[in-house]
Image (tube, rainbow, N blue to C red; front, side):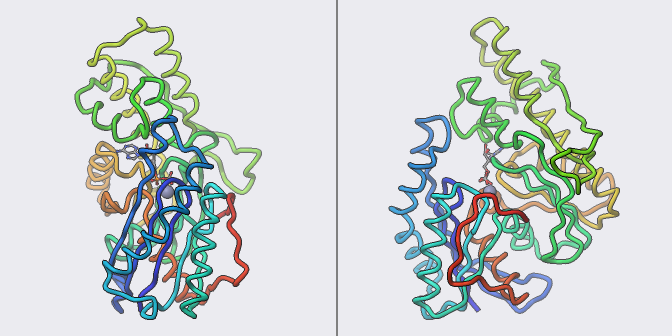
Length: 348
Ligand code: KG4
Ligand code: ZN
C-alpha cells in the first residue's frame, strides 16, 4: 500500500510517498520525500511571517505533490490513503495542506488520515531505524516544541514533560538573531560552536523542580525552560564591548550550546531511568545538531541503552514522517472525517 503524506505546518511545503513493507520490525520505506523550503523568503524578516508562509504554500503545493508522485513512480490511482498534518502549527499554513489533502483523498476515493505534527517527528525515528525497543522515551525538539514522550508501545504517545516557555530551537533562533547571525539560528550556531570554547562564558542552567499550575497532569520536574538562558545571552551581549571578535562569537555559541545540549540530555536520561526505558530517541529540527547527536550516542553507550536519531533529512519538517504516522493511524482504524479542520493548537 502507498500513502501520500502532506506537511505544511510551518515554512516547509512537503509531500512524500511512503510504502508499507509488510515487515513489522521495519514497517515503512520512503519512495519519495520532496521539500520546498521557504527559508530564503523568511530570512529577510528574521523569522517566519505567517501570511507569507501560507501564500507560498499555495504556490508550491501542487508542484511539490506532482514531483513526489513522479519520483515515486506512482499515479493518484496507486494511492491507498492520504495523510496530512492537522496541527499544531500556523493555522493559515495548515489549512493549505488540509484543504489539499481533503480534495486529493476525495478525488482518489481513498481514506484521509489526520496526523499530529509531533507524532510525525516521533515516527521519523521508526521510519529511519525500524521500531524502537519499548518502552522508549523520545525527546521531540524543534523550533516550536521541546517535549518528552513515553512510547510504551508503537503508536501510543504519553506526554511526560514540555517546555514552560521557549522551545530549544526557538532559543537557537533568538540567540542567532541577537548575535546578527541570521535565520534559522540552529545550523549556524552549531557550526560556529565547533571552533568556540564552551566554557568561555558561564550561562545559567534551569532545573525545574515544582509542578506547573497550568499542567496539573504532569509532575513538572522533567519540564524544560529556555527563556532564562536566552535572556542571559541577551544581557551578556548588551553589556559586552559593543562588537565581538569572531572568536568571541564562537565562544558565546559554544557556551550557549553546551547548556542547551546538557539540559536536553539530562532530562531525557532522567526520564529514561524513571520509566525504565529500553531505548531513547531524539527527533525534530534540533536533533540535526552535531553536538546533541554525538553526546546522545556517548551517553547511551555509557548507560548501555540503545539510542536513536532520524537521518538529517528526516530531522527537520518533512512529509515522509507524516505519511509514516498516517500509516500507523490508518492501520489502527483511525480515519479522518470529510469535514476535517486544521487545529493550530492540537494536543498529542
Ligand atoms: O522541526 P523543524 O524543522 O520545525 C519545527 O517544527 O519547528 O525545526 C526547526 C528548528 C529551528 O529552530 C532551527 O534553528 C533548528 O530546528 N535547527 C537546529 C539545527 N538545525 C535546525 N538547531 C540546532 N542545531 C542544528 N544543527
Ligand atoms: Zn517540526
